[in-house]
Length: 517
Image 1 (cartoon, rainbow, N blue to C red):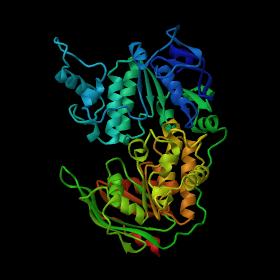
Image 2 (image 1 turned 180 degrees about the vertical axis):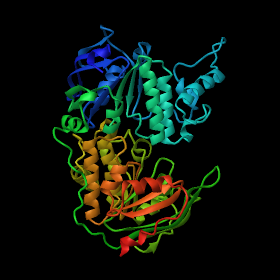
Image 3 (image 1 turned 60 degrees about the vertical axis):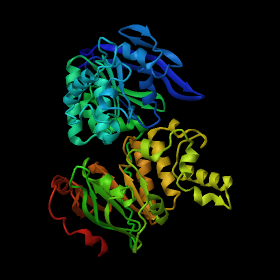
Image 4 (image 1 turned 90 degrees about the vertical axis):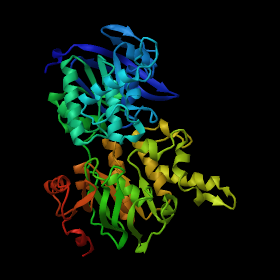
């Protein structure tokens, strides 16, 4: 489609944004076209979210101007932008857990009856329509905190669609969605485009951008480095504009050989509240210095397995062993002391305390290490923090900064650093690259490789096929709570892994023991 095929509805001219001396966006010129998907891409910290927050009225530009339908405008708040037809799906979910789905969708613009009371039934009816369009399988009266993270993301999308916006900004809308949910979202986007809605779309999944984008704008270090029609570009072009060179292979095999068995799980089971098993008799083993990837789609039971191993479900059964010794401790704190550590999938809710500093988050789980008599040694704690910031290349001017001021990729490094400071023997990583860009992803994967070389056993769960193939020494596959496949990396094929993940019931291929030959 030619550049003349879509009218420009919104234009940023020479827009800059400065936060206490840090330039987040520098003289950006950005056009949003009607009835098209306008893709915005860049590494974490490149300025994408800042640029979107300016359009959505959450932030005001330090310099430059915004033109809407050719007229200069300024938004004093997000409500102001909404009233002009601009809606946004935030990357970090903006929902109230203790309220229902319908209440969240209509928060701040409740439907009222003639007595000016909130009409809950009308809200639930309308909410059901939006949820139906997304084929979400969610009831409008359900509490948001009872939904899994992918369903919460769909509620966030339904909320944005309900605004009937002329411009809809989507910041990482698919980061927690299953493949089937992504397909439905793309149908909704096609429908919105046909109605003339301008979509601004941010994602780190490059193949996804190429598939649905009409126009692409690339940001690097707050500056726009490339703008093009999507039909004229490929992933190589995008990566070059993003990081200034072609992507490096983040996980080359290095001839490193794993050691003795460091961890074993036997017949782990977790009953579902609704009946059946969320984790169904899963047994696996891990060697020191080995990376075992667990591949499965959303709902396969990967996160639940990790929670069972960490002692987060009292009703779970089965046994675990660390370095050949049975772990009898049932609670998470004492399992951490035995040498287990978890990087959770949802870093915002479970990995970080957003109001605390980077330093406090890093040492949160390992404070007992720094206790001298009855006091915490500030010097030892500072030394550990400085060492971890350097080791993981966390981009932060001062570790006393609030962790919420960091980009997603750097926040993920803080969560990893927090786990490493507990001195684990076994590291569980649940979707370690969710919502982070190619540069930060490469950093995280290089760190995983280095840690495995140092003898740490790593179990990591992912729904990304390329990731599990590139990083793992062995690959386990889960489906419907069961282990449905176990492959040595040398023998694994994408087709075999996909087949095992689609194959919900049946025997596990007898390849487990090959790792011990």
